[in-house]
Image (cartoon, rainbow, N blue to C red; front, side, top):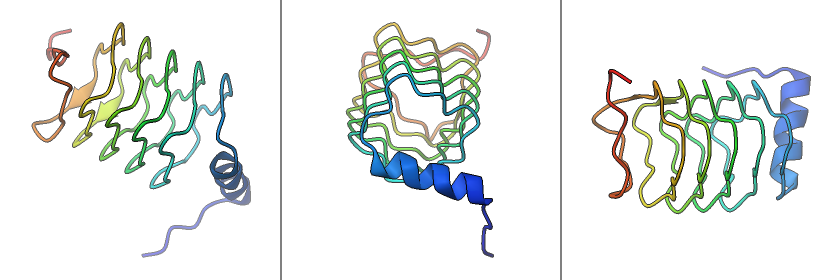
Length: 129
C-alpha cells in the first residue's frame, strides 16, 4: 500500500532533511515519519503533535523541544539530548530512548509499552501521573 503525501508535506520533509539546524522552528503537526534525522538540531523547536514514527533521531539535539502529543512510536533516540524537552502526552510505543539525556524532561502522561526502553537513570512515568 502506497502512502500519498500532499505536496506541502513532501516539501516540508525535503526541507527538514536538507537543513541540519532547526532551532526554534515550528514543525507542529509535521508528518516526518520514517526519516533519518540523526544528529540534527531541534533545540527549542515546536514539534507538538508531529509524527516522528520510526524516525532515526540518534544523537539529535532536542533540548527544550516541545514534543507534547507527538508520535514517537518506534523512533530511535539513543544518545539524543532531550534535556528540558516536553513530552507530555507523547506516544512512545516501542520507542528506544536508550542512553538519551533526559534531565528535567517532562514525561507526564507519556503513553509507552513494555517494548519502550528508557535510560537507566530515568524512572518511566507511572500510569497514574
